[in-house]
Length: 354
Image 1 (spheres, one colour):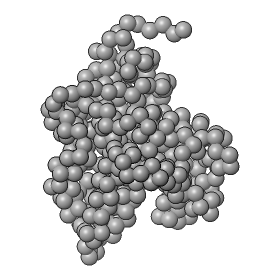
Image 2 (image 1 turned 45 degrees about the horizontal axis):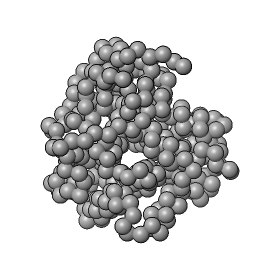
Image 3 (image 1 turned 135 degrees about the vertical axis):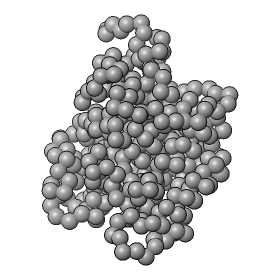
Image 4 (image 1 turned 180 degrees about the vertical axis):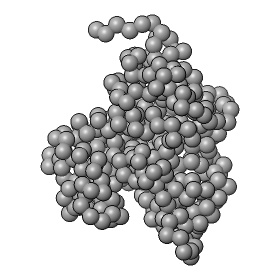
């Protein structure tokens, strides 16, 4: 058995090898041995302070990767991935409908929120303009979001209110730059993580978080991207597998683990991708790329094409998690916009004692 020092990073009592985390003040490593972390929960009697930015310089990235917030987020992301194995989006939605209106209230509350935001797109049509990208009507949509945020989070635990408002406001794009990217996707993952930390989800809800709730979120942001012609955040989506998303590929690859017929190479077959896009998030993302981009797939999406050569979805899944840490969570241009409060605290994780 591996021996650990007494004061080490932990996640719900599970040791995390110190090599998982960089030295504070040092550069972020490009590869991590990934431990299976346990989800963390806290019991708060009242809300903490307003979340605020803490990653203000490149050296702060290493502190973030050594924080309680990082471990809580990573633990939740991994847990949702494990719960998604073998699940289809359509099958999970059918299960939810058959279970009745009283079952899984947390999932239904989140879907109602996303349905409201989706309806707002219909109520905020794009404005006539000459510019090809970045329709200014998105600013109107975002203004409505920020105005109604307090009411939108009313159905959720009050102790998480300030944190939920902070993350939800950043989850759908930037009204100034008229763009969307993996940093906004990260904000929504933070939103879901905060709900998990305060025990909003029942034990049997987790299998629906990715394949139902996040899949619905993906539909909404796709509509936003298309309706308001948002540009990719960063340098043409350099921080993502495609122009906009990353987590959807990680959770989507989990759905396909041990699939009897579909292998990673199936993404090169456009008809297969289109047929199964409603069932699997990974293929829904590929289908969106086929609709939005012209030319050979290996030319406009070389990284995804290379990944299609991996023989097993389990290998794709584990590799994407390492890549997510290295190429998204460790990148200053993305994480500098993150905010930290009581539910995702910037405190060093090694302050915890085993």
